Picture 1 (cartoon, rainbow, N blue to C red):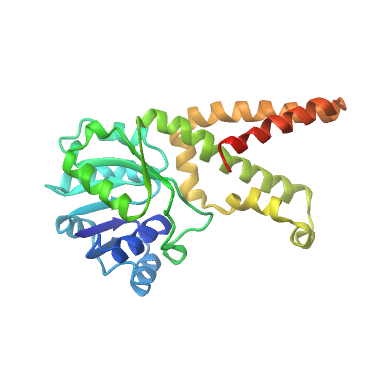
Picture 2: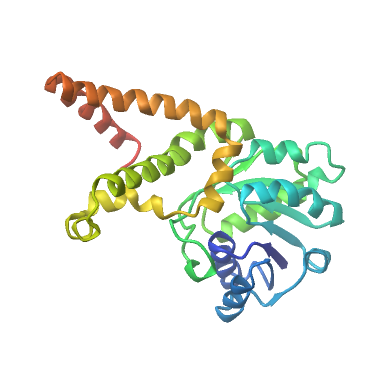
Length: 279
């Protein structure tokens, strides 16, 4: 199968490695306006060649859109204008606005809205990882709006990435990702800024930072070009989650201000129950 990947970065590049190794993709074409990404993708063997969009889509069986969600909003209708029988999928972290953008497109059913639940704080094809998606969930949204043959291709793709499938409405997806992904990034960005503001000695941070701090602020190294559009597109859900998060932070603050350590312990113990979900 000939696969075109639009955006041969971390996600697109990691997909390319595994899809080629598994035999799912016999030929991978990269489409990317970043010349450095194209060069690295060719050097690492992530892509077999680089082409312009129109040419690549025309000769492909499957088109994967792996670019920031604001760019996907603009590009997806263009890709659907080009396709005939090709399957098209995206891998963005928001789904509702993307689905709405092509709801009335005559070739809407050639598109499958998906979200592989994996990522790191790094970006670019140089950070692509072969085993990235193993054991993780892949969400397929609004499946009834997609042709069965396209769904079959997407299911096979995620099977080759060793992911398990979750089916969800696009609006529900955006609510859930606001809680489990998007607010985590905002919290990490905010904590990093707090430390950078109050702790002026870079060497002290480096010397004293332990595993807990590193894991909490790891996401703060994530790319703003990717995350600002996600927050914009999922604004209402993220605001709702942030309001609850701020409420929880105020409870911890009040415990310390009022020296209410019994309640502080109960807050921590209640949080411990997350072990039922995350081992």
